[in-house]
Amino acid sequence: MVLYLLSMVLAAVRGRTPRPALRVVGPGVEAPVAVKPDGIPQEMPPNLPEPPVLEPAPVEILDGTEVFRRLRELELGVAQFGEPSPEHDRILASALAFIGDAATQRRYAPRRPNLLPQLMRAINDEDTSRRELAAVFARDPSLVGSLLKMANSAYYRTLQPVETIERAIVILGSDGLRSLLAAAVLQPIFQVTNAEGFPRFPEIVWEHAMRSAHAAIPHAALVERADGFAAELLGLISGLAEIVLFRAAMDYWSSSSRGRPDPLVFASLLDTQSAALAWRIGADWELSELMLAALEEQVVSSEPTTPLGRSLRFGRCAGALAVLHTNHVIDDESLRLSLPPSGLSPPHLKLMWTRLLHKHEDPRTVVRKAAA
Image (tube, rainbow, N blue to C red; front, side, top):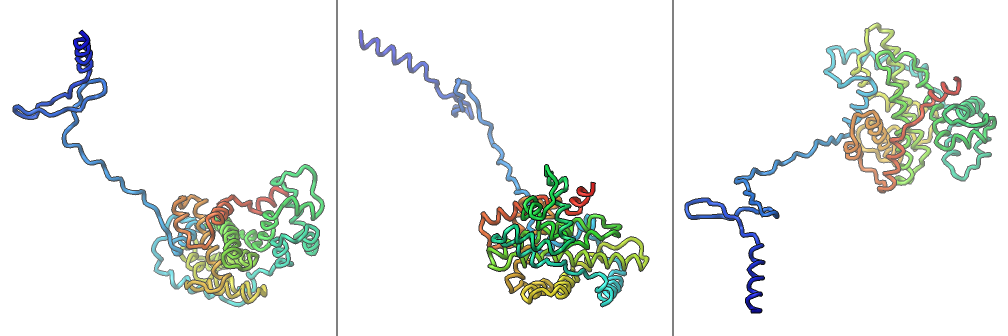
């Protein structure tokens, strides 16, 4: 009796196990068919197509020439430079003769702001006390006025009026003081009243100069073991040279009555003359031999051999990439892949990008807010 009951249980268990479904594939030939867990047969379709191979999204890796070509297009407000006009070379030569004239250079070349080297060194020196820094500022009344205006502007939203130099230094902090001094160095940018045809040029040059200086500082200090203040100042002077050259070119174009300025002529002037003009400004400002050597190395395309020269070259390229990114010309991946080798550690590189991509307050805006 026990054996009979066991045989009945086994038979019941076998009855609940689904048999493989069969599919007739030919006379007298059957093949198994896939079965779902609920027991419903599901035949697999024959000759399944191969899955599509997805092409990777195109990523732009820009070399230095392409980076600055796109920066020039952004500065001059053109989508893409076209072919040069038949008169391009003649107009360019005429403009170069005008700009290269000694009297013209004396008229446009800016004077070095008073106390600039002492102030920038003091700001970069962590051991300098607020009282010592205030004493240096106090020697330049024009800078004191700008300092107090900036500290009392709506941008800083102070509850009480700022009336002392030391209090203004605390309110602005290192970044604010750097912006103030950069405004002093780049003062000729604020004097551009004739930018007809290229309304964004002063703005983009200011942005590039600031971001270039911020990139050159860590490269000089951490990679080259050079003076970060010197690298910062060289980045600002390079931007200053471009705005001086632009002003001279605009005046030349207006005096020649040639109609609308040719963007390609302006781009050629900037590409071929701005580095040499930066060196002349540096010489007039009696910069050190090391700083002048770094500026001179930017005149040629070969790789710089001095520490400051390498930091300036790197800073200019990194600053240009940051400007292109913040103006939506290139994406994150192109930004990352187009940066030349820096020698910075990943954490320092991340910190550099954070600073470079941060929106910088334009001192012209601060002054307008203070006057409101």
